[in-house]
Every structure is written in structure tokens, then in C-alpha cells.
Length: 112
Image (cartoon, rainbow, N blue to C red):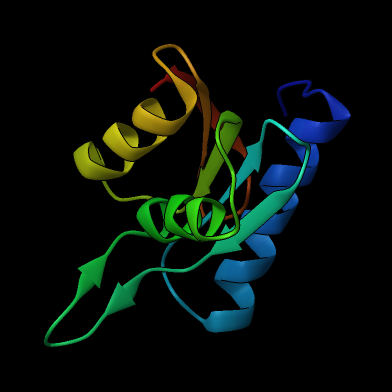
């Protein structure tokens, strides 16, 4: 496993736990500029479809976050253009996004 900062490892753990708890293919978590974390699963309704990352960012915004410092996603299938755009919009270009497989093994750290 790639060595992660303890706070980034916490994000990965939250994303993995949310994925397992909800029983979805994907889980995500973000940390805002105040150190608060938000974990989410995807939403799939007839009227609304959001990736786990989009939901996590929305939770941060709706809680008053004005910036993000990091994000993590577990079990993502392919690129999440909209999720990355949401992270970049709130966190700024270059915000790190840790990408892990379904077991939580880090595959890459991308920049939003």
C-alpha cells in the first residue's frame, strides 16, 4: 500500500466504510479547509444521479465549507469528470484526489 498522510488515510477509510455500509460500488470522502470530513455514496434516482464524489462535495458545500484540501474515492469505475470538476471548483486546481480500488488499495493520486 502507498504511504499516506494520516489525514489522507482517514479519508480513504471513510470512503471505503461508506461504500461497504451502503453496499454500493463506489464511496468517496472529502476534507474541507477547516479539517471537517464528509463521506458519501452515489445517488441514483430517476430524477437525480450523482457520483459519490459529487455527493461528498455537495455535503461539504451545504455544511458551509468554502474550500477543500483533499478527496478520496474507492471503487470508481473510470473517470468521474463531474466529480473532479466539483472538487476542483471548491478546492482549486491541483487538489489531490486519492483513487483506490474496491479493497481500498491506492491506485493513484490525481489532481482535480
